[in-house]
Structures are given as structure tokens and as C-alpha cells.
Image 1 (cartoon, rainbow, N blue to C red):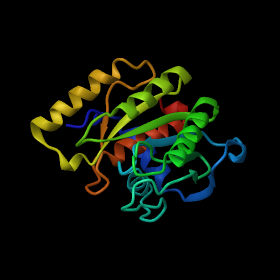
Image 2 (spheres, one colour):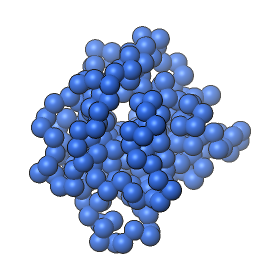
Image 3 (cartoon, one colour):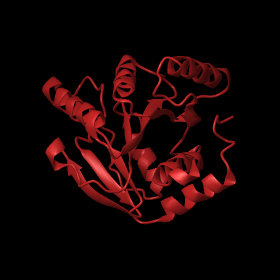
Image 4 (cartoon, rainbow, N blue to C red):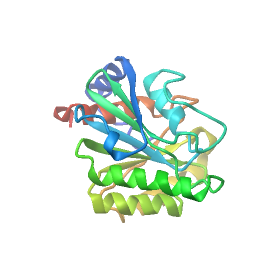
Length: 217
């Protein structure tokens, strides 16, 4: 059972309406000085390369090619900003932790991610995507520690949840919950999602709608 399946009907409907709006690509950013001017609240998506980040962004917006997907991990090399109905900005961040990317390039991406997280006042929430089959890795723990220090709220999103079942899924959820208890910036429950099956998409839309409209909280 999804840990967030008791979200209110009001919040779920707000999420549906928000993501029915037009979602447009704003710009790709490779340096902090090129960030968009302050505007709508921002929600960022981060995770290890090949975790299914772009596929999840596409599933949320209902647009198959909004965020680029690739069989080659590490393709997203910028902070890609999308604006949703002028009410919320989605930030698709470069993946991290992929060993085959040249180290100087990986270091540059990592610095860009961390600098953005430390200093962006518009950032309301970070969705930390973790492959449900593999669980949290040391690089994810590093990011969670930084988010604690920067006081950036975050929620773990377990992706590809259709690939793991039964006792294995129960164990993965329990492991994740135990890890999250150590991080004050973390929401206590992970959200299970599958871009292929549509699992957790409505719930995630609802959570993001609450960031666009604080009155929904």
C-alpha cells in the first residue's frame, strides 16, 4: 500500500488541475548566474543517474517528451526549468553518481546542484528519486545531509516501484523510513511511484500542488 494513499480528495483534485495546465520549458542553466528571475515556487527533482527522473517528470505532466529521456545515464547536464501554469516551476537536475561520466564533468554538475540547493529562496521542496530496486546509496545520503544543513525540505520518491513486490518492497520501505528518521529535513514517508504503471502519480501531483498553494497544507 502506498504510504500517502490517504491524501484528501481536495488535494488530489488540486494536483489534477495544476498538472492539467500548460507546462513549458523555460531554460537550461549551467551556472548560477543564469538562473531564472524569481517567480513561482520551485520544486526540484534530483537523484542518481538512470533513476528514472526524466520519465517521472514526463509522467507527471502527461507529456512524453517534455523532459529528455535516454538510455545513456547522465544526459541531463543542466538545471532544466519548466513552468506549470505560471504557478509552479519544476527543476530537472543533473543526475549524480554515475561512474562512467568523466570526473571533472561529474564534479561540475555536482557543484551546480549543491550551489543551487544552498542558495535558492524560491525552492520549496526537493524530490529525491531513489530506484526502489536498489535503495539509498552513499551519494543519496550525502545529498540528504546537505539538505539538512541547508534546511531544504525533501521527500524520497521510490521510482520503478512496479519492479519490486511483496516482502522485498516491505523491506525497502522499512529501510528507507529508518534512514529518513536521521534527517530532520526529510518527510517521514517515501512515496512509491512507477512512470510506466502510473503508480503514485496522482499523489505526487497533490503534494506538489500544496507547494504551489500553501493554503492547501
